[in-house]
Amino acid sequence: MTLENKINEFLTNSFNRFYNVDTATTAAMHAAQGHMDNLYETAQEVGLDADGQDFLSDCYVAGIVDRVIDELFSNYEVDAKDNAFFVELEAVVETHKAAA
Image 1: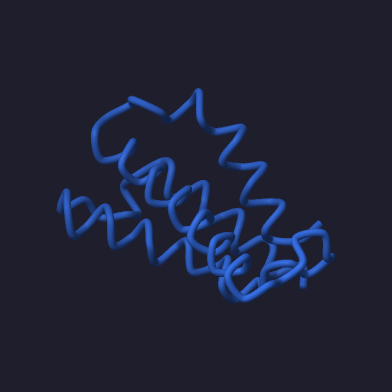
Image 2: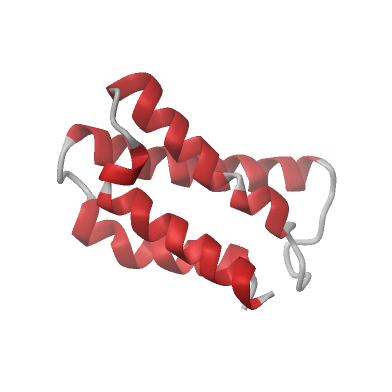
């Protein structure tokens, strides 16, 4: 399974657990989804085939971690390591990297 698929699965499965927990966590979830949406929009603009096995590079998808860190710290002064959503998201990325 690609990192793209793992992240999408995590976002779908974590919605009920983390949405509206607090303002910072909700914003972190929106930042994560926004990161994926931006990747899809960019891929469409350059004409990548969404049906391909490697539709989005793991490198670009893994940037979701930095996007969420930035959202939590810049807008809420929250250390990402203290946010449960971020900790689980980072674990998905790190587990994928270790398995690759």
